[in-house]
Image (cartoon, rainbow, N blue to C red; front, side):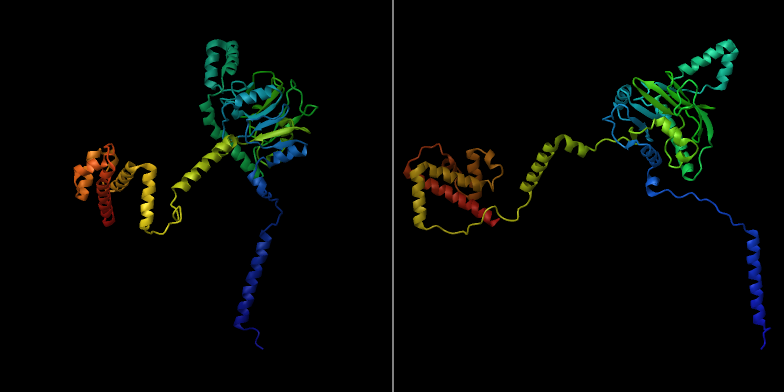
Length: 437
């Protein structure tokens, strides 16, 4: 047997090259285990507040997602305005103010402080940043002491931006929140930092402690108009602020956003969310993501169902009346001729009941019905004009027709036959023209 053939040597060479490549790849490759974030479920992908709802329900809170603020919950409940489009319906601000003053708890973003419906009564305001150049110029002109006073006045007198400016700032804030949510879905997010409760407020979870906040830095800066009931301070501003209003309270999230299902699992975000919403067993939590009005058709049905039904019935009857019919209204009677006895009997009965002049009136009505088919605006013409028009079409004497059409002329019974004959002749000639056409 010849083992050392050319084909065998070629196969052995190819096998040696492949084996060497596999050994080289194995020596240059390191196999390690990497944790890959689990893709969110279908419900979590559609609802970025699902983690917050689950956290609240685990703490014994009843969570509802209303789309209308026309009716507020009972006093003691919490309403979280999680709107992203901005703007609430007119009149809702006054309803929210009365509800909070009666003991409700309102939670909203700092970007919502400049809403026209909320800013007049909210006990929290946003601060405009003062340019450093303005501060230095003021300190050089009035001295260090006056500068401190002016800085304090600037902080106090710097009102919140106008409503158009607030609306213009929304896209930037929304884009930051969208970026945070996207990073949170990828297992990443803003860097965590330490925040603390100041000594002047009662701690949310005694004793006082520091929290590890993994949210976006505070923006915009906020300031309370009244002493705060609870707050969280960071190095660059207030992150969460709660102030009293009447018997209730208002909590402002500066830079914070309770959206993002993965965000609540980072650091102490879950504890901060629980403290901001004051979650406790038996509490009612409203999450208002988008307020909507009832559609026009639903509103019409709710307020005037009877009128809608009657209108629909009237339209249906009008359509049925105007629609083409499939057949005659009554069963058509076969045409036939009456016998001479029936004709004489019927004429005698008519004359006996109505008199001889009624026969002339009936003959004139028959002629008028036929003449309307051939003479334009026949009913608007006078008696002489009618007689002339009929005479032109039938070739009869117009003067005789005019006298025959005049029912006010007293006539004897002996004078009726020629008048009736003339009228019947005119009617038959007009009918013949209609049949010919």
